[in-house]
Image (cartoon, rainbow, N blue to C red):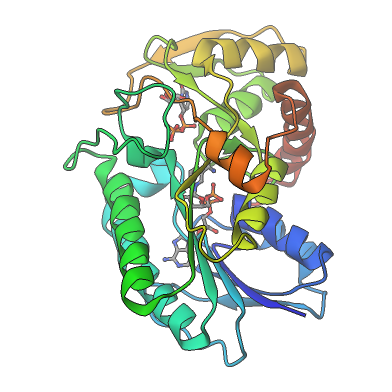
Amino acid sequence: MKTILVTGGSGFIGSNLCKHLINDGMRVICVDNNYTGRMCNIADLMENKNFRFILHDITSPIDPEEKIDQIYNLACPASPPAYQGPHAIETTKTCIIGGLNMLELARQHQATILQTSTSEVYGEPTVHPQPESYFGYVNPTGIRSCYDEGKRCAESLFFSYHRIYDLPIKIVRIFNTYGPNMRHDDGRVISNFICQSLQGQSLTVFGSGQQTRSLCFVDDTVDCLIKMMNSPKEFTGPVNIGKPEEHSILEIAEIISDITATKISMVHKEKPEDDPSRRKPDISLAQSALAWYPKTTLKEGLQKTVEYFKKDLKQNCKL
Ligand code: NAD
Ligand code: UDP
């Protein structure tokens, strides 16, 4: 049985990943400081003898006192309101100091380590759709830079450990992912629109709503993370994970209103600084190297997410 450490394991993608790994018969050590993660996301795993939770901030080193075979490094807030503003310094520290601590742990255990990087490394892209070979167009001092540059520097650190110590690394660049275990108060577009719509509130559209995103359901993202981790050692990535279908924010609002069967109203708010105007992944590398393609249609994924949020809003779980 492999022992797998997942940082950020009580968060949205992390908790879905932990569940898949446990179902696959792995031992899972989940490390999280619960900044945006919630114990309710992993409540049904806590009874499992192969699951261990450690409340810990990865900006300090950790010794789990058992042999680790693989590390998935997901710790980092991903929602713009959670990573920006007063949290900006912690965000960059988590990416860089946290990343270094996890790389050192991987080196001690000769474990393969996977970094969850982001489409944000492409910034406001001048190339569309975005392939991994595109170096990006990022504002290095703007309000998103704590996250974007933190993630870019983490990629650089991972490659330095690979070149200098021959550490087995994997880098994935995740595009917008949605699904069960998102927080209702997370602040991202899908959670906001679904919860606003279920509560009879106006949908908050930032700017004109013409900006686009490509949305991937979490089960597909997790499937790709696991495929990437178990790919041949020489395949380091970076590799894009996302669904190459582009929708404007206004289209997303309409689709959600159809699924929730509500007549929606919209209120326009100011577009946040440096909010990228277009995003669509080129996933030909994931298709050819990992034989992966996201299977879930947007409608299916959103239907599952709406059912999840109906329960999550009732439970109002914050911790
Ligand atoms: P999330 O906020 O739900 O999860 C992040 C988890 O990391 C939370 O449980 C949080 O408590 C934990 N965390 C934050 N700082 C920590 C620290 N210093 N020490 C320990 N734990 C810490 O976000 P998510 O959407 O699940 O994202 C997971 C990862 O995937 C992140 O690294 C994010 O950058 C990346 N990613 C996500 C998306 C997406 O659309 N969801 C897109 C691109 C990249
Ligand atoms: N957005 C919006 N209303 C919201 C939340 C987000 O119009 O209530 C927009 C946001 O301006 C961005 C897109 O939706 O253009 C995706 O935002 P999100 O925070 O989900 O993720 P991002 O891709 O910006 O990291």
